[in-house]
Image 1 (tube, each protein chain N blue to C red):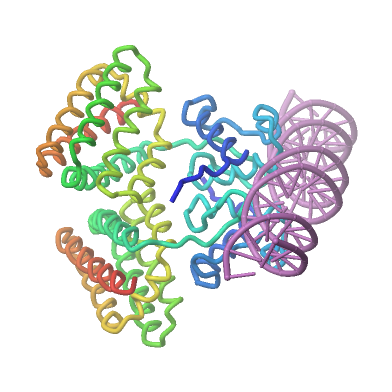
Image 2 (cartoon, rainbow over the protein chains, first blue to last red; image 1 turned 180 degrees about the vertical axis):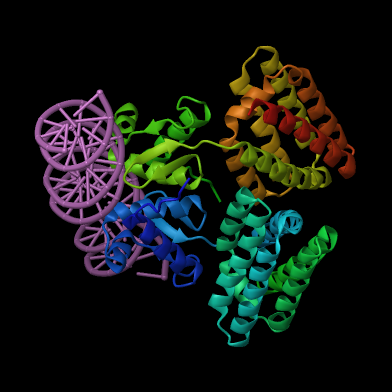
Length: 215
Length: 215
DNA sequence: TATTGTATTATGGTATACAATCATATAACC
DNA sequence: GGTTATATGATTGTATACCATAATACAATA
């Protein structure tokens, strides 16, 4: 079965662009999103913009108020805490499965990603570090066969992207983060599921603590 | 502060209607959804239909193929298994929190819901039993303060609604299910978090096993 | 200054048009 | 007859114009 790339529709591109703008903090939480402005800035019709908006609404990235348009979603401290709790559960489970399934090719790729992440953090390229971190975890989840879980995590992460960026760039995190990742990779390589889970949990718990202070 | 109901927009109603049709198996998995037909059957314009479609696409209830329309999402056995695994994690966590927070009013309401569920199952009103079961868990999640988690569970459930219905009505489940719920309620009432979690896990594991046989 | 009235803006929704693309049936060809 | 090419129709992708209504900003008034 060969995979064939479907042509990307304008709507998909616009969706990505808009989502990116929100998660990259171009549009701030609470900020109003006006259809026509979006049409103009993206150069597409209202039809497309409205479809994108619906999609993002369903992702909880924006919130619609009947007859009053849309605003970028805000997020409460409680929700942040819950999101981190859920991530801990899902990621611990994923990292265990990954440890069981990972071959050396995967381990190698994880190492490469970790390296790049460390570099980005050194160079203060936080946005790129964020993307690479996402790729790192995506590999862990998919290797573990946790596709549904990854889908959920990706969406949860989108809702806290601002916090993730702040957390990544926070004082102690810039060297400690990559250290943790290295430990995770090593545990995966040794198929030590318990240890992999333990470090993963620790890593995320630390992140959650930093995030909660920033809220 | 008085609460005023926002007027429901046409799009919201149409969305509910369409989602309901899918989860109630009016549209079968793999079935093609043709815009114009939907417009006609719901009596709304294409714009509205497309907005709904985008929303449901994001909920993974329908899948869009560029330039070739939309089909009701199918679901693989692996995905079903994963969904149940995730539900176990989330529901165990929720039921623990619920046990800590629940007052007698909540316990009473849980009892009432359980009663109704048992009745529906007796009368073979599976769809209603499904809705009540959803209400039962919703109460558990919200009492435990797990709003984000509930949001996720609700969506995951929508994707396996057919299986849930079959599971509910399966042979041994019609009396055993309500029995389990009763045990959960009792554990909650006694604030016995460990026991509540244990039963919850058992309950869901059984459901997952039945579901996996039906796949 | 607080209230009311009014003008403006934005949204919710419809209808329509048209190009691009896919699926299918048909015709032409070897 | 079977294969390839072509025409056709259906459906989606996208844009646009339009209207009614609700929200908002702003001016007028007491």
